Image (tube, rainbow over all chains, first blue to last red):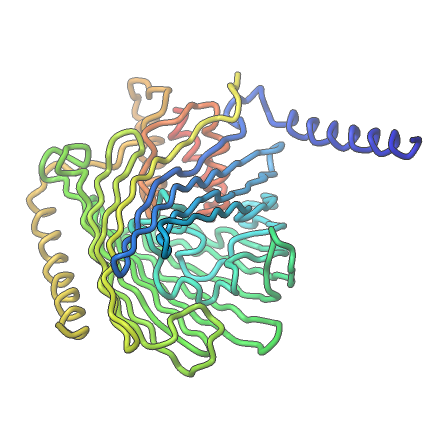
Length: 345
Length: 106
């Protein structure tokens, strides 16, 4: 009995501490209210005549504490309805994507601790939120360098190394320990990325490196080039990644015209997308999530950007491989939300 | 149709798309920046404020818009949190963070 009281008292003290930390959020400034953001969507995927339906929600919470701390976390909740021999079956998936604490140590350094998105290439960290990705599917090589789960458990050092009017360089380096925890599953690895950005040309070039430090230790190399011409809504993104057993690339172009009344006209809201990608196996040892045989794929997308942060996605993909060619049809609608967790002053 | 033909067509389409975009943009006389709507409307602009806006707007266009479109709007009460989150995600410098915050809260 006594021990249960002391347990309750201990939990109460911890809850009080957490509340005190949350209250330390600067209400007076009224710009640092914790926020809730993310995307909610409904997707369909038709592959080989079988259609899967997936409602999904990806909430993100960001809680600033004091002047230098930020706690952020993203989760995913999805239900998939897929055909089986008797009709339709379903399964669900609920998980934390990441949970990290950020400390703004100096003008050029942020220290991150916790569970974080593996910083390799561009897709995992920057394009994976469902409200950002132009197409429903990620690139075939997205798992290369992501160290299995796409999540690291450990620490990151990141920041802007140099920021000038004509160029800027940013960096990130990380170390992750091995974890079999269901919510924070990760592999022992280390790596990083460096980006050079030329604002006048709107060109970004980045190099990534990752090393798996458990089992058969493997190196991963990546390079990306993005070009987004000034005063246009045209974007050309490309990425190459090479692992010990496979390699591949993707090139994606998307465009919105301003020529017929701007981006908010009904024509300007139309966004055609083209992505071409190829993967190549270097040997038959499968450990990286890439297709088992050399694969080519072309994705033709057509998105429509509705007002109020809503987007309709549609695409047709043709995938070729020695095992099977496939037509993949995908449609979806995504709403991006962003609001305070409570009403600030 | 073989994979090579399809990929050839896709690459060809891309090759056509790039100059087409350039041609259309050359005809576009009024270039618009992606708009950021906040609940706080910017005040009528003295020159210094306009400069601040252009810096913040430029930083937004160069960093945030590289990955995603601007949200339709959000309350000023979370602008600091949004900017701090972007500082970590987009690896902004302290100066860029301050300019961006000023852009959201002129």
